[in-house]
Image (cartoon, rainbow, N blue to C red; front, side, top):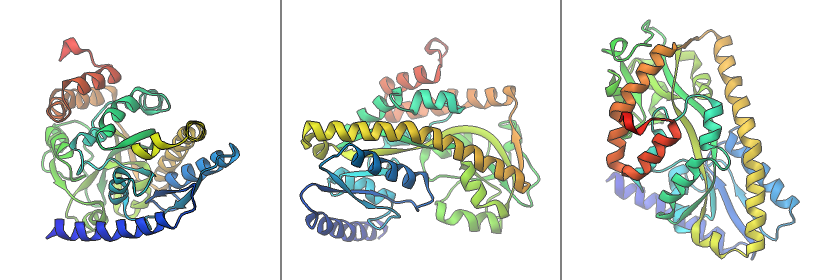
Length: 338
C-alpha cells in the first residue's frame, strides 16, 4: 500500500513537472531544491544563478525552492529521469543502496579534512560520480551542512562518551537505514530507526532517549527538548548537486563550460559559508545552555576503531572492495592493518 501511494504521488509530481518543463522557453531549465529559503541549499542556488548570469549564459534557471516540485527523494528520482535537469538533494538509497555511503562513519572528523575529501576537486567527487553514472546523473559538487553527533533529551542525565560501555540501555533514534542501525548497535545502543518527521515528538514524549545524526543546526531547532550534545562527529553531512547526465552531455560545450565555471565558483563560496554557519549554530547551542561535550582523543579513537572494524566491512558488502579501498585511502586507514 505504501509503495502504491508513493508511486501515485510521484506520478502526480512528475506530471506537474513535465507540464512545467513543456511550458518552458527554449533555453530555460528547471533547477529545484526541496529545502526552505533559510537553508544553505537556497543560498547556494541563488549564488549559482547570479554566477551563471554574470557569465552571460544563454541558459536561464527556472528556480523552484522549498519542495514545490516534490520532496528531496522525489527530486532525486525526477533528476534521474530528466524531468528536473538540475537539483541539490541528498542521496536517495532507495534507488541505489550504495548511496548509504554518505552516512559512513569517520571518513573525516574536522572541517579541514572534510574539505580535502568532499570539497571542490576532492576525491569523494570521483567516488560518487562512479555510482551516480549508473543512475544517469552527474555530480557537479557536494554541498556541506556540517558534522553530525548525538544528543540526549531533557530528563535523561546519561551523557555517553565511552562506547560501548556508556551506551547500554539507551534508546537512540537513528536515520532509517541499515548502516545507521549497524553503527549504533556496534556502539552498544538500542538503535531505533525513525523518520525525521517523527523525531521531535518522540524526544518530547520520551519514546527515545536521544538522537543520532544531528548537525548543530538541527540541535538548535530542537533545543527546547534537549539536554546534552555529545560531539562524536561520527559522520559528515553533505548533499549532492546533480544534473541529469543526458541533459548535461547534450548542452553546447560553451554553455556547459559556463555552467561548470559558475558551479565551481559557487562551491568555493559555499564551503566557507557552510563552515561559518555550522560553527555559529554550535555556539548558539552552547549559549542556550545545552551541555556541549567534546570526546577526548582516547574516546574518539576507540569509537573510530569500533566502526572501522565492524561498520566498514559491513558497507564493503554493499559497495564492493574497490570503492571501500578508495574510502580507506581517503580516511587515512592503513590497508595492512585491516
